[in-house]
Image (cartoon, rainbow, N blue to C red):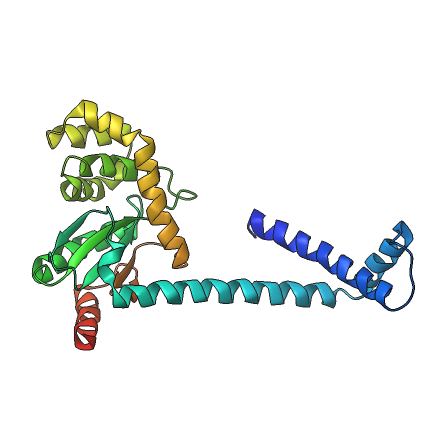
Length: 253
């Protein structure tokens, strides 16, 4: 259970105590709550633990529904106006941006590395009508190099070399680290002073954070994840599966 969830549940239990105490006060003329009254309320809750369990379950369901509503709203916007989700993210393919494929990825995720080749093949075949957009979703709790790699790729993007740098990162996934980030930048003949300044800048963090906020709105917790005009699919899927989603979207237009 996440720390924030524990805090919320503790707060919920305290609220239950307050509600029960308020109910007792409203049942007749009472003085202000005393320590004895609070102890009585706590005893009631201890003897009826199902009250807390039911309240926690109701709270969790409310949170889940709220998150689902948020996701549905964003997905609907993707269907109506996919181009608005491109922002400053790296993009390639069709300039019209009528069909937009968002790729949420983590440079240290092995499944993302597998999917990257398929994505490249997909956009080579369908780049005349699909705009590919890369979104950062570093899973920092399990991939310590995911965020540094994302920042390095953002620095390469500032010099127009994101897609080349992205491919090189996935091809050398077993070597992720500062030495590799510098080596790849030198191989791409980037301005190294600018590269180092960009990859350690607050702007690189802000760019990743923007993508993380969108991922949070969509309820994403794993990578890779894809959306083509709001139609979602996840994992290292085959080229045929990607093309199937594309045809489904195209048929709806």
